Image (cartoon, rainbow, N blue to C red; front, side, top):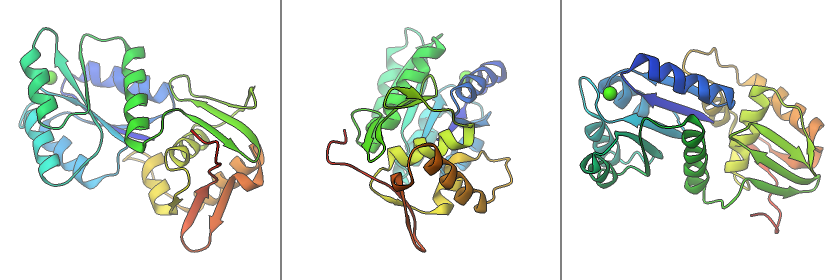
Length: 225
Ligand code: CA
């Protein structure tokens, strides 16, 4: 899962980025509205954390332009405390949720996780498949298989996280690549095949189906939430 942080306070941006990375998300940072608008429209993100008071272009305007252009990326806005007007303006402009500063990082993670899940239309991060019950807890970056902790690298975790959000759908190598690497990484779609095979090894081979020439499909079971 890949997140865009648009925040001009460099210290806060750095802390949010490191909190997200600790939870195995990958995050890009934009320090002003112009850059945020551009990145949000040209890169693939699973959610955006958007400050409202920004240089060059304020957060409300960035959000309005995204929505006017048909960009539906889930957006969590950061507002100042006690400014209900900001909150209302943000929600009217198309924000999906908000958080007032100062906030607890744990709450930020919980809200982000809920936002991403809601946007994918899933009630819970639980997958029942041929291997057993796979449970993912994105805020602690833990995955269990029938109650047993499964040891995953950051890339493996992000790959599984993305596939779980899109379970039942065919996801191309290119799309996966865009959602598991940040802006500054050298992307190599051949790595995807290796990652998929490692995940199959850690869970079971039938869990991820290869659709030749199209991509990968995470098995969806009837008891799936
Ligand atoms: Ca600001």
